[in-house]
Image (cartoon, helix red, strand yellow):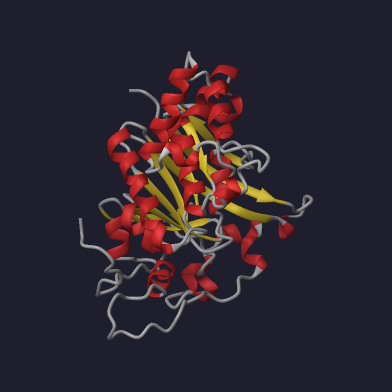
Length: 337
C-alpha cells in the first residue's frame, strides 16, 4: 500500500521564548492530519484569528519548520526530500492565498504568472501547446482568455485576480491545493463562484483542498471534513455534517451560534466572540490542560488535565472532558447530504 499524499504527524510549532517556556508562544499544538490523495476531499481548518490556521498552512507548504513532529509527503519528511522529490512536491502541492493582489508583480502583465510556471515546471514543449494549456486553465475557472491575457493586475477585479490564481494552480495539475482564506477579501456575490470552482476541481479533476477559513458557512457548503482549532489545539473534528449538525465541544457550539439563521423571525444578536485570550494559555506549560477551560460553560476540575480526543460517533472526534450534544440543529444553511 502506497504512502498517503500528505501526513501532518503530531506537529507543534512554538515561536519565541528565548529558552523560557513561560514566554514561548505555542501557535500549533500536536496537530495531525492525513490526506490520502486517492479520494479527493475538501478538508476545512476552521477557527478564529490566532487559532493557528495560517501557521498550519505555512508548515504544510514548507515555509516553516515544525518545532516537533513531521510533515510528510508520500511517506518522507518534506525537509529531507531530495531535489527531485522536492520539485515534485512543489508541483503537486499548490497554494492560493488570501490577498489575490499581493501575489502579482504590478510591473508584469498577468501572463507572467502562467509563463513562469510553464517554464519552471517544463509543462509544454512548444509555444502553441503552452498557449493552449493556459487558455484551458482560464476557461476552467470561468475566465475568457481574450479578456484577461495581456492585462495588468490592477486592471482586473479582485474576483478575477483570485480566479487567475486558481487557474495558475490548476495549470500544474496538483493533487492538493492549500487555500488560505481564499474568499475573505472577495465580494459576497463572488464567493459562491469561487467555491463552485473548488467543487468542480475536486469532482472533475480529482484535486483535494485544505480549505482554511474562519467562515463556517462557506466551510459547510463545500467541505467533507472539518477541524476546529482554538489556540493551536483541535477542539473537534470529523465529518462536516456530523460536526455542524451535532457539535459536541462548547467552542464549536459558540462558533455556530454566531452565525445568523436564515429566518426573518429569528433575531440575530450579532457575532459572538469568546473572551479575550490570556497569553498564558499559549505558553508551553499550558499545553498540559484544556486551553478552553477558562471560558467553558461546562468546565469542571477535570479540565485542568488535557482532554483525550474521543470518537463519540463514527467519523466524529471531540477533545473534551464533558462533551454534550445540542438537542436542536444549529446550522441550517443547506440540506443534509
